[in-house]
Length: 240
Image 1 (cartoon, rainbow, N blue to C red):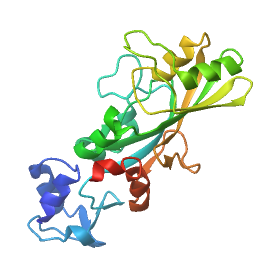
Image 2 (tube, one colour; image 1 turned 60 degrees about the horizontal axis):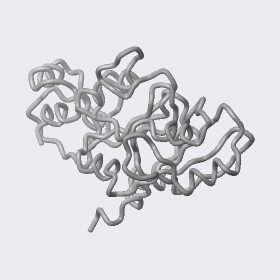
Image 3 (spheres, rainbow, N blue to C red; image 1 turned 180 degrees about the vertical axis):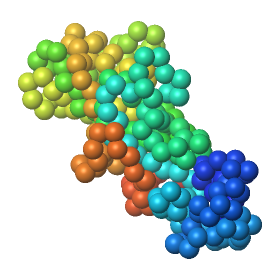
């Protein structure tokens, strides 16, 4: 692979921009400055450095974020800033998309990728990838409410009741809810169908992968190989 093409594939601009940056001596390859945009590089052993930041080459981008409240999961926002503004420009430039969404006032685990097959596997209703949420409610969580969520509640515009995969009470007004679907405002609508109301919502996990405790709100990082394997365990049938 030519150096300028590697740069372009990682989101560092058009061919013209990448060629110019290499010729200007702004790019290091595995720690050594290279000014030849046509230089051949091995993607398997490639680390690019631009503006003092090291970027290991990744054929596909898999990223996690601790989404803070007050951000919309869209490039075209209505009233709040976009979660994409929290990502570095090269990731946005290479076209990463949200793997499922969270409401602007919700927090927690949010994934991004430019791998269309991965996004489909993680978001398709047919794959039954579980999402775990912690919901703080306006009123106390009753046993009747828990039973209704476990057995199924009827939502507007849905043909049949929808049940949680799991539901447990954490304290007087907080519950943990595990869902297979990802319908619009699903947690809020399900809780609302029981006569209660969600006042704050946090996504703790997707499939077998939980939000790392070390990640701060608004921060992002790459998903590592072993973490991707945890996610892949959420849809084993998709691998056949």
